[in-house]
Length: 77
Image (tube, rainbow, N blue to C red; front, side):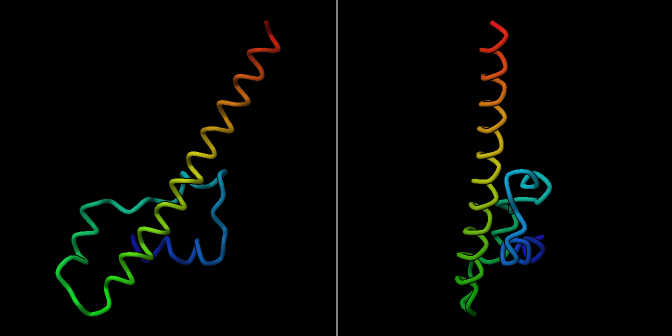
């Protein structure tokens, strides 16, 4: 699952509309990296960066939806 997310980020195909379709890295998967000294810290940092970008897009999507809902509710009053 970790390697699946990286190409989406590199191609920049993830946005607020499709961010919920891309899985975020689970903490239990990150344990695969701990304890190894063969360059895995760069994998860990890349994985965390990509997951934070996906999470950010998800937050943007929810914020946008709430904004639309608030605007429609204020118009109906």
